[in-house]
Amino acid sequence: MGRSAVARRGRSARVVRWLLPAAAVVLLGCAAGAPFERNDDLSTELTARDAAAAGDDAVGSEVLWAGRIVGVEHLEDTTRLEVVSYPLERSQRPRTGASPQGRFLVDYPGFLESADHRPGRLVTVRGPVEALRTGRVGEQELTYPVVATDAVHLWPQAAAARSQPQVRFGVGVMFSR
Image (cartoon, rainbow, N blue to C red):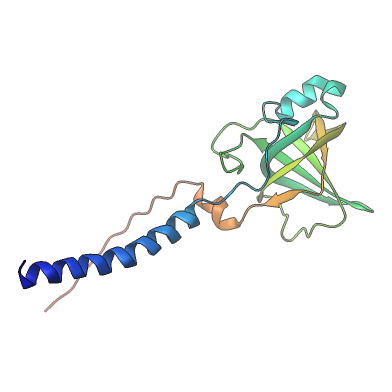
């Protein structure tokens, strides 16, 4: 075997030693886990709209719902979020490109900072449908399923921005002598 073949194998071994750990880091970074475990008691087929239509039959159902916050209200011992519901992605993020699936309320025991949990932010919640409440959006009366939970996952804003398609156009100009 010639000297150049040995040198190429040495370079290949160095590249592989560098490439494998780098690939592992990239793969682990992309494989972000879902915030909540799923179990047999969890209803992923029941939507917020279906729960509102089912009435008292939906009360007590353990749900995993996600959506975009449209309102925050601080009550005496509770923070209430109003959320427009969307289907779940595999990562349990709301799939905001899909059609909304109704609205629901989240009753969180204690204080959630409204500067963080503000309208527009994406959340995923898990918990039982505790009750149904009526409310209004403009002149329209709605029935809201209420999820009582201390398990609210607030998605990073970068993840929310990444879900929207981004297209940019530019013009380049170069001057030379």
